[in-house]
Amino acid sequence: MKPFVPQKLPLEQVEWGPLIPLIASANRSLAFFDGVLQGISNPELLLSPLTTQEAVLSSRIEGTQATLGDVLKFEAGEKPSEVQRQEDIREIMNYRRALRQAEQALKQKPFNLNLLKDLHATLLDSVRGRNMARGRFRTVQNWIGLPNTPIEQAHFIPPEPELVPEYLDNWEKYYHMQRPDALVQLAIVHAQFEIIHPFLDGNGRLGRMIIPLFLYEKRLLSRPMFYLSAFLEEHREAYVSHLRSLGQTSDAWNAWIEFFLTGVEHQARANAEKARNIMALYDRLKEEVITLTHSQFAVPLLDKMFAHPVFQISQLSWKNMPTRPMMNTLISKLKDAGIVEVLRRGSGRRGQVFVLAELINTAEGKKVV
Image (cartoon, rainbow, N blue to C red):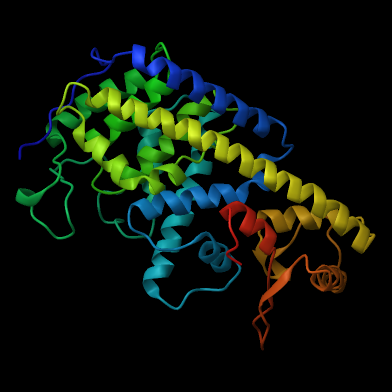
């Protein structure tokens, strides 16, 4: 197998006719999801479990095993005993940190290759791959295959390293072009990035991270909060198969674009439903917490628990917060009412760990706590 020679963008062989119904439904579903986002006063806070879940699922496609619950427990001081699981969690936290970093950067200037390298540096900070030219485009040949297999047994060999700057320059220019449909453009942007495979590690996660950033920059979303990894993880074999087929048959690009648009349409509806369920939960709990506590601190406390659904009381802090004894009283009332549960009892210097289980279950779409 020789290094792949990608087509330059824009592509010429896309057949638009079969795509039109999918384009319409995907754009319609995405617009509906953005309407839900715009109806949430503080989506970064209230939907933070979904952002973490996206990081979990995108990392899982690359082989990590940590769950949303594992990450939230880790942040509350409940570390798993397995070193490998701790490493997985740090990778997920880096992914989430890179997403937030990108959102802030895009408020200052358009997406560019320097930002891409910065995100790569954050993604691989102090985790596996940190010695794999972190924050730098590759200058050696890489390949995709089973672990510890030589290049002769590769499933795919990306372009030669000498060609990476040329293809990235073309890719960046295409990213900022005005095209007939932005979602079709995004499907091609994502796939071409994976074909170029410009880093020695982290390409899959970065390629998926680009999806919400592109939607945000193209103003299809009011926030870069679109969680496609759930669909891609569920259809992992088809996802990989479509990407590997690109350039091999005349209709491969259309098949990939159809798969991608189907994913956007499906996941936009699922994301909207999950966001609305979380908001409904928040509204209900706000009434319950205010009624239970009769406290001016009820809403700030609930906000903090939504941002950190697994927590120790000492981790909940905000300006003009109540005293520690009062916080203990407030949490005790919520525990007695079944709103929060004890995840780990305190002993010695270890504080109790509490969980807002209903929020985690809503984010996961099933009972996990």
